[in-house]
Length: 148
Length: 272
Image 1 (cartoon, rainbow over the protein chains, first blue to last red):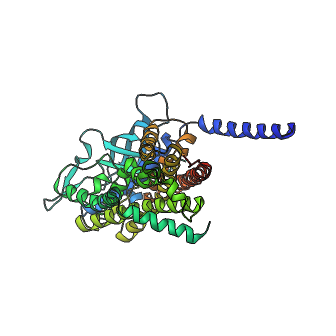
Image 2 (image 1 turned 135 degrees about the horizontal axis):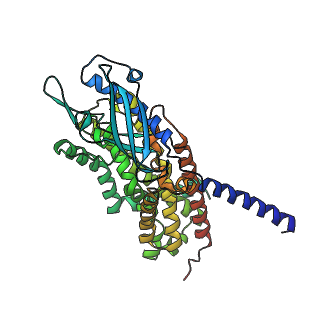
Image 3 (image 1 turned 90 degrees about the vertical axis):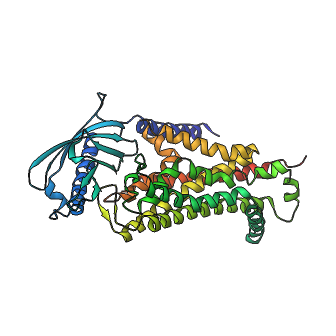
């Protein structure tokens, strides 16, 4: 192999290595804005489903005006998998502003488990008017978002 | 190499496979396991809450195939993918039968192709049986109620069925990638223990490594990530980035491992 060919191959290898290094050392795709957007959407959709299960007047998911604010626990970093805390503000079916806190465990692939902190939101099961019990969708739920 | 020659090898390998207890046992577990799981979920109060859709297994039968899919990704799929692929070549070393196989009228390439096709077909069959059994167990034992997806949206039975089918289809190529890896190890080490065990252990190690924050590019290059790429299909709106990357990575594992395995077998000195 002649010298220019070796140099071209070397340069290509360096470009590939630099690209890998750049992608390796970038920040985590698990960020507060992504988690907040996922929680807001999922929580609003779950309230919509739960209202239907409880046979209340149907409401659109957007009517609950859910906003979330999330921060990573035990770390100065604002990105990465692990334990997060999210505060969710939303308008309840009676149009009263409600505020709930969730503990989240987020994995590196963008999936999370959210559990209400304490016994807020009525606990894991809700009693319906006929005495039967249904799972409280809002108390603990799983979701996923695109980490890319 | 001719198709007829490959088909002859496939026929012989299928007869050998059908006589093996491990192949029959694997398929029987794939067929019966989901029914046992769904039946257990019906009678017990605790739920597999650490798996996606685990909270929903009593509310909708469509959660059952997704819980099985999530659980099986850990070690069941790697085991099903390698139980035949990791043994189909090294068994000839174990029994000392390479000389007999290669002195027949079939070429070395035809023997390779026939054995690989048999291993790949078994992997597809095992995953297919597990998929159909999981779906049937969920719908028959729990019911076909709407399913709450990973964005909190209710999917009606038709939507749920389509997305679950796509989710199962998405793990076929990663499974074949592991089968190719197992075949390479089986040829390279001449050991069925390595051929079957290493893909399972490596998959487990990859999934453990993916639990901690590390370089994103490395996580995406691990074939274990492809087994979880179906999550995007159960979101609203669905996202396909992880699925496309996982499919590309699986195809790369498949092509590279098969090419290396083929070269190894062609160059191997069987005499002696």
